[in-house]
Length: 252
Ligand code: PEP
Ligand code: MN
Image 1 (cartoon, protein in one colour):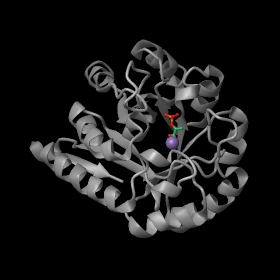
Image 2 (tube, protein in one colour):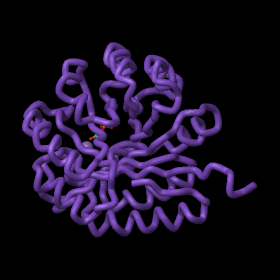
Image 3 (cartoon, helix red, strand yellow):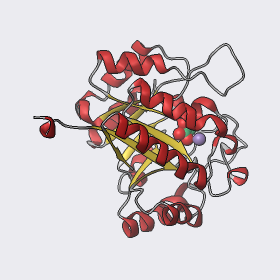
């Protein structure tokens, strides 16, 4: 009977914070040819209006070619329903960022696309508020909604956010949603991304969003939390070892 059981799948989505240039994306794919789902921002939601805002329309154009060439699935953030027109043909998985979890009109529009949505937890949302937001996506059905813990506001300032793995435990115990963790935004410091990833998987999550960069110190956004390709390779190897212990499969 054991062979017939469906194995748990752990999905690891890597890629830069922002899809800065075709060269950056190609460098990642060259090093990780088996990575078929990648993350990266095109329209960035920056706290400071003077910070880099993402590649915008330029990014859409080069990503269209790269996606076709490598047969990729792109996960990218959408912050306004007006972006649907330009994002829909290149996006496989929409990401709703922490600043938009409460944007119910956006959620309703995304629900109509039929595509998988990663709904990040707002930085100060309770688990109930997060689940209520997910209700706005319900037309998609449970299997197309992924909840992503990305850290909440805590009392300490050692890290960018407070990684709340208890939310993962709660959601896995009490709901049927797939639950991802984004250790990059939770910790904000690259040297903690690996240990946080291991802890997240042990807490029961179904996937991870990891920010990578060819040269992290030169990343145009979130440079301090990006891991380089050697660190990502080591992370993937450790995830595979942990997954085999848990009898889970790893998808990239
Ligand atoms: C991101 O994933 O690049 C991002 C902006 O995430 P968050 O909305 O969690 O800050
Ligand atoms: Mn980021």
